[in-house]
Image (cartoon, rainbow, N blue to C red; front, side):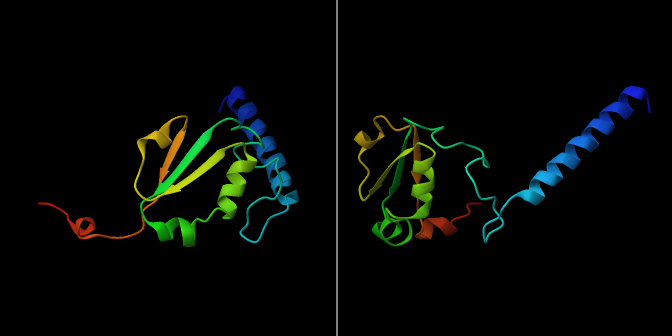
Length: 117
């Protein structure tokens, strides 16, 4: 092992040690996720101006599982997304201005079991 390799190994060891100390200081929620806006993949407002279209043909999906007051939508709005939740027959006009489309489906049909040969 050369001197350069040893130096890199020491730097990695020091970095890992400092990260370990930071992780120990984090406050965690009941699921083990860090609490605070400074943690996560996106900061508050990072997606400002981006529109997320969420659609399901199944009424109960939106009504019972992903209603307007679901914490998922609140978290996405905190990050800047405009969340547009739609259900029923899909209207292609809804796609205008959308940056993402989330399609949610829960019901199984006979086609789901089809494997082909």
